Amino acid sequence: MRVSALRSRKATTVSKAVRIYYAHAKCIYGTSRERQEIECIRTCFPNCAMVNPNRYEAEFSKSGLGMDYWFGHIDRCDSLIYSRLMGRVTAGVGEEIRYALSARKPVYELKKGKARRIRRPVKHVSIDETLHLFQIWRSRRSK
Image (tube, rainbow, N blue to C red; front, side, top):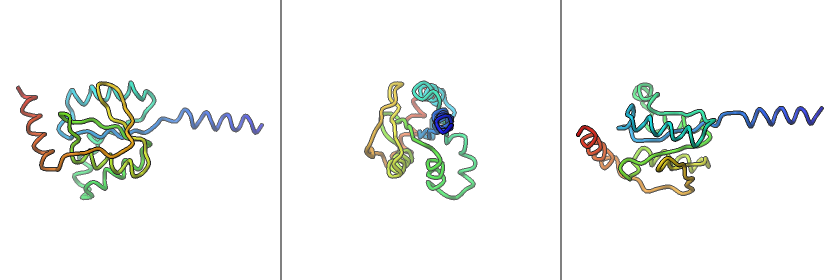
C-alpha cells in the first residue's frame, strides 16, 4: 500500500506542468516575432505553463512596483527563458536573468529555436541603450 501511495504521489509530481517565465524585450510584445518565440519555447518545453509578461503589462503599469512586480512573477515560476534583441540583452531582461539566477532557478537562452542553459549573469545594456535599441528595431521593422 505504501508503494502505490508513493507511485501516485510521484505521478502527480511528474505530470505537473513546469512554469517558465518568458523574458523578452517589450518592443516585441504582440509581434510575429513574439509568436514565433512562443512556438519555439513550447517545442523546447512541451509541458510548460508559460508566464508571458506581455499579458500583465496593464496590471504592471498600475502597480507602481517597478521590477519587483516582475520578480514576484519569477518567484512563482520554476525557470526562466529569455531572448535577445538584435544580439543584445536589454536592461529589464538582464535584471530578470540576474534575479532568477540569484534565486537558483534554471535560466535558458532562446537562440535559433533552441534553449541553451546558462549559469552566469549575462552582460546587458543600460536603460538608455535599451530605448535606443527599441527605436532602431521598430524603424527596421517598419521598412
